[in-house]
Image 1: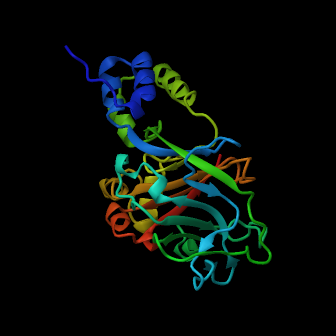
Image 2: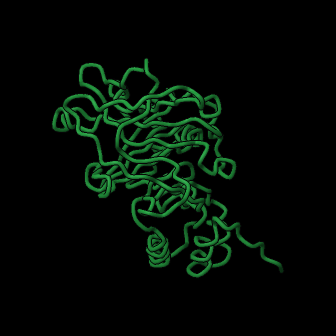
Amino acid sequence: MITAQPVPWAAELTAVAHRHLPADIAEKWTALLRPCARLSTAPAGVVGPVVGRLGGEPELPPGAEWPLWEGNGPLSFVASIDCAALPTGRLDIPMPSDGTLLFFYFDGQLDDGDALVLAGDRDSWAGARVVYVPAGVETVTRPTPEGLDPYPEVRLTARLTGSEPGPWHPTVASAFGPDVEDDLRDNFTDAVGLTWDGPEHRIGGHPMSVQNPVEYEVAHAVLDGQAGWDTPELQAEAERWVLLAQIDSDSTAEMMWGDMGALYWLIRPADLAAKRFDRAVFTWQCC
């Protein structure tokens, strides 16, 4: 029997699966892998493509208003991504082929963390924003509003790599089946964890959820909490959402989201294809 060779972006995780799992389960698990653009700090002095940056000050059109959460204040600028510099054609989501995405978040600087942006609280959704600036639009550097300290600027590079759905995702439970021993599952989870290296910033692919799968968290929120966590309704809604961006805690950029947490923006593929970034939904998780 001839076994198909894994695509390069999936090779590392595929090898881990076949080292630690029975062949049939390894095949089921690797079928769940998805490509993502992994964002990493650009080494100083190294010439290479820069796809974006964390922190600093954003480039916005001259007439654009700084994103604001009414009643709470301006949002902090978190990151910008040059879509033309990403390997968008090799991702499995309909990312724009050009233009710039800017991510903003109300991070608690103005109120010492009193107002929280929560997926389950629609009134707080204005506390996280995605701004898309089409290619060719004039922009200027906008100073950070008074009362906010900008995060240190960190340039980012990207590489195409594999992403897995995480040990608590329902699709993984289905792939493993009911008879897999806990020790085998735990050892495999530990082995996958050893492939992680530094902050997990990414565009597309599976989110790296800190707690329960964030797709289900967003689905529960958009259904106004009316669907139970183990219902077909919630699963169907969760499958309608894909990760747009994940921004991890990062000491280099002096970003700490709770206790070593991460920020997530999810979107439906049709809205992504239509560049309806106003329809992205935000959530965050921490340890």
